[in-house]
Amino acid sequence: MLAIRKAHGLDNVLHRALSMGILFAGGSAGSICWFEEGLSDARPVSISKVACLGLLKGSHCPHYSSESGRRPMYLSHIEKGLLLPGYASDDLAGMYFENGVAKEIITLDEQHHVYSVTYTDGMAKEEKWKVR
Image (tube, rainbow, N blue to C red; front, side):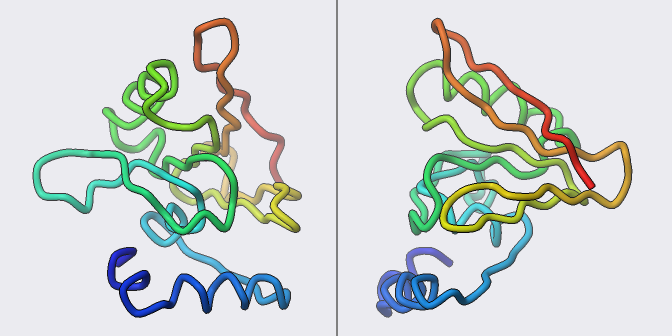
């Protein structure tokens, strides 16, 4: 999806649309694409790092708690410097950004969350965001 968007110049169109205040949305791969990079299972063999559109700074990992390998892989990749620090989201949880800054977190229920994942003192550290 990302390669096709870039090959047809849609990445430039999306950057212009964002500067005009147009709202973007998406889940799973549709949420990873807005960040600089993320973890995806779109490749056949395993979850892997993908370069994204860079409309939002950092990385993103969807399905954080629903797929057993996601959380440890995301944290490990950040600790090894293979991924930028960023955001992780459970299924049924979403993030609203304004001017590149996360402004609000919304979830369907109390079991799903969004996390900010930072890198400090050689470790990836996650902070659960307050949600509505």
